[in-house]
Length: 346
Image 1 (tube, helix red, strand yellow):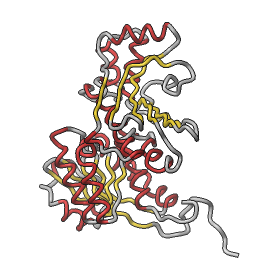
Image 2 (image 1 turned 60 degrees about the horizontal axis):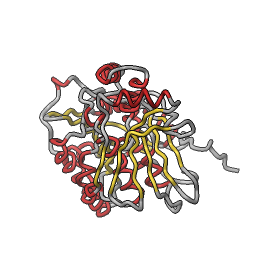
Image 3 (image 1 turned 90 degrees about the vertical axis):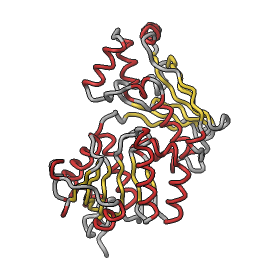
Image 4 (image 1 turned 120 degrees about the vertical axis):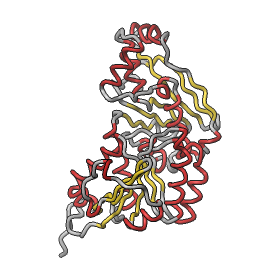
């Protein structure tokens, strides 16, 4: 009788070698490279794929990593080759994007993703900006070449909300999405409820590495709305570019609202929501949540999404604190998902 290996253990099969090109080398990109360097052997044993970063591209420079070596100092990087040449030279199967989600990089992120997809290279991205503006074009490019796009890093970092919206809701029937997908603003609201001023709360979030240097997209509700726009696109096929947003921001006066909520044993939350019967509209509202509400239970920079399914009941995913490593882990997960061998339970 043939001995059956432990479930999920790929150690009795040679791992597939998977070349990766990384675009973007800020905190998330650096965490991605570090994690792969530390965990490559364990990932190969567990999932049957050995991920190797063959090149890193950032701004106007690029470095090659022969044999998956360490990233050299930026002073040793060279002018970038074309993306097409880089993909060919590294034999990459995946382009991983950790580019900042800024408007002036949107077109660049879209162009390189489309170029990779058209060559049959999968795209795994934590970058949001081009997903909002080029969703349909990206989807068409992927379908034409038989390649895949995965966006977990753009919909909640380590929180697997995107996976649920993309696959776990099929046939279940989801009517609503209600979420606190921005860890920074949840942390800030809790600090306001403890008596901090808004500037002090933001500074503390920045000191802990939760908030970015410019937290305006968090406090305005734009980031939370963006993530729900993307989740709605995965769940219901909405085009994010066509989604309207109505957002209530966090401002200096919000501190008194947070204190009033906690005096009633409630917690103020910035809740982003969408409904299938209100197509192409996302709200972000400051709401008092009560005990028993999954959004009330969040602490610090945790996130949560509640998928309202009338027949199946609410499907809830929570946790996944905001951090560069959390986003990097989402990139690792998605890269494995698009490249790992599929058989049996997997």
